[in-house]
Image 1 (cartoon, protein in one colour):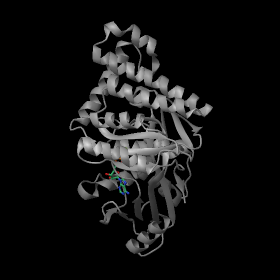
Image 2 (cartoon, protein in one colour; image 1 turned 180 degrees about the horizontal axis):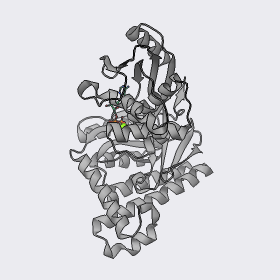
Image 3 (tube, protein in one colour; image 1 turned 180 degrees about the vertical axis):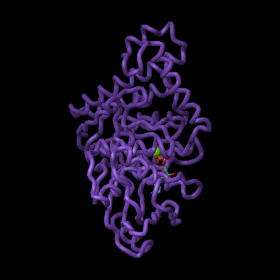
Image 4 (cartoon, protein in one colour; image 1 turned 90 degrees about the horizontal axis):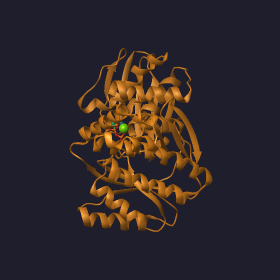
Length: 379
Ligand code: ADP
Ligand code: MG
């Protein structure tokens, strides 16, 4: 990727870059819909991501190019203006530029910018956080500024929330920023507090991307959010993370059924996340796997954000040798399933699962085998 980045930069701008940075995508490991409830969540940085190259210019022009659209976008320096159409991808680096002053940091004036990626877009692997963090690192290094990781993470989240306009939690940027090879990042969303937990050897990630998406996904997501906030209010706390399963059970009769179910999922999922940390620290991947699959079953039956496609894959994977556990990864209502496996589970087995899916649903999911990888870094 480094050679490709340098060659494409030379070809596009006719010079060599001053600064190179990369940031990884991530897998949501466990903690479904816990982040906006102030709970805990875990994610793993993967060995794929976004690479950014930058060279400062003295004429105040900002030029952007990416292997994503292959059209050069030229903008003047100064306050970033939101782009639309084919140039909308530029909103990610522009959002970072717009965020920097909010953290007391300086944005560069003119520059030539290039991004390339080996992450599939929209596969639930957070290419958006990867481009934000790689861009932020490059902009800061090119202007001689260094920041703590937690600031880098907050800059990326600020860009996505405020400039791009996606109300994501801290998981994506937190894992891209704090990820480490052979580790899983644990995040307590209040604070937020970040910690890495070693992943025992012989743990492999497989992603089955169904390319399905519920037509009403935004509305369904908003409905889950609303139900959780209503439950917290009825329980007299600011966020559901302030109560445990016993308090939700005690309130069962006075909560509308749907509100009760959503709250039950969230508080029990937080308990599962905490158990996963303990099981990982013991090196007990069998128990980790059981917790991952239990997380899926709760999404399926209690939070009700799964789909027949995702359930089919989890059912199949659960019955396949070498699989510790499997669950939907991301917001749900379509998207991807991830499986945690040992090395007994290989490409041939993955293809058998994909073929069974194709027979049932008409088209095969994309199958991606991934390892963990380092977090955002200058190169
Ligand atoms: P996800 O984060 O799950 O991959 P999002 O919709 O949040 O999906 O973010 C995808 C968007 O991020 C793309 O539509 C594009 O605008 C931007 N993006 C990702 N990778 C690149 C890249 N290599 N070059 C330019 N833009 C990119
Ligand atoms: Mg994203």
